[in-house]
Image 1 (cartoon, rainbow, N blue to C red):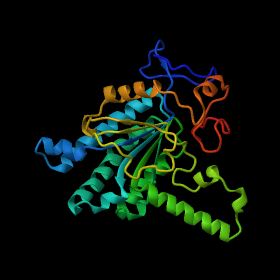
Image 2 (spheres, rainbow, N blue to C red; image 1 turned 135 degrees about the vertical axis):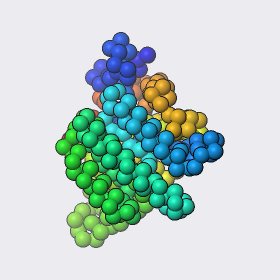
Image 3 (spheres, helix red, strand yellow; image 1 turned 30 degrees about the vertical axis):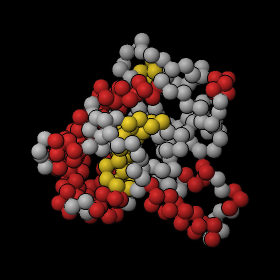
Image 4 (cartoon, rainbow, N blue to C red; image 1 turned 90 degrees about the vertical axis):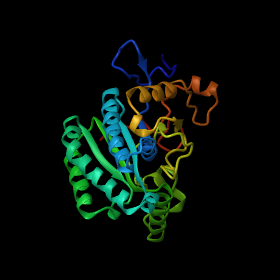
Length: 280
């Protein structure tokens, strides 16, 4: 199936089959929900659900890389998750550390850049050091960017950006008259990263849970009942199929969208005001 778009819109394949050209999201974001319920239904400890969820992360990163998605953001640990039982939080930190140990070389070998958003200073010191080493090791990679949201909250991110803005205005670094949505985006954790084209939430809940509140303004939303540990290549393919069946108008009418000769980007400002982004 092919989505009808502008003549100069880049097209990519989902399954490597040249007969099945499709338009893919440049940036895919995922709320990985359902690990605890997966474990509970099997009368297993919650941490086992998180372990199986880590396997789903591995599958998803691999499939996204092969598919040609440039940015993949995974909501791994929210600011609200600090309220969970101490043993669960500690277990999640260990799993993250183990994931970096086991997957970093593979990620690096495939040209994937690893980075994070959120306040990682709240994480254990050794884990923060490991994360920073992983970022440094993969900083030159440009095939794909894997962004892990850790100790992240959308409201906190916006408030932090607003405080930075206030400081810059008070110090005379910028004038309020020259400030706009695009320049505000540069103050967010996601500076330099395009807004998500598609958000997937697993687990059956239908909300965004304080995730990328600014960045999701024009993002297509996809909700599935599948619990995260069971999310596989078929489930992701189904989500991508749904995505390419939608028409993204960015505030324009269908007629305007059809007649437009430019690529509509998701990077703030007016549609078509900025070129399609690429990894640096």
